Image (cartoon, rainbow, N blue to C red; front, top):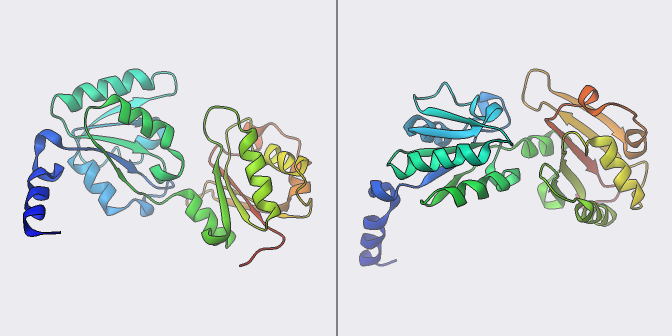
Length: 247
């Protein structure tokens, strides 16, 4: 990059031009404050207004003095419209998402991008998926990931996961409370030909004081009869260790 190009880039950089300051979409980590990155804390401390779901913004509400716009699935459109008005008026805006926005928050991230008239810059965080991979001793190179925590039909995802497992790849799966929890996912994989003896781990509340890890098999997990809300947390990840893998 030439000196002239560098000079033009510096002159147009969002950090140098308050009018075009980006909105930051930050990852607040898996829940434990020890996993909140310094960059995320800096963005929160400098923000005028923060938007996000209740449980997410609770993780950063005591940093700085930004106004918090709490939203739910039912009123997120209205809250994001209010957030966009504040940003358009010149306030520094931050959207807060669980874990790492690149892992499972892309639907909310897309809504933020459509709502505001500024660039949206993603600040990566530590995802519970990364923690789950570490606890399960699963290298990402030999794993297939899926987030079921979204609206819509999931048949194609289960086809993809079963095919990957059949090729010897481990699985890292974020569940969807409360219709696609570990037993339902295990049954979907078995229906598609997965080996019943395949090792599965149910990881809940990762990095939090009540973290738990249950090691079982797909067959045993599929046989569980339960009310999902009573049996499993909504912060659950299922990992499946392939019978034959290159790791």
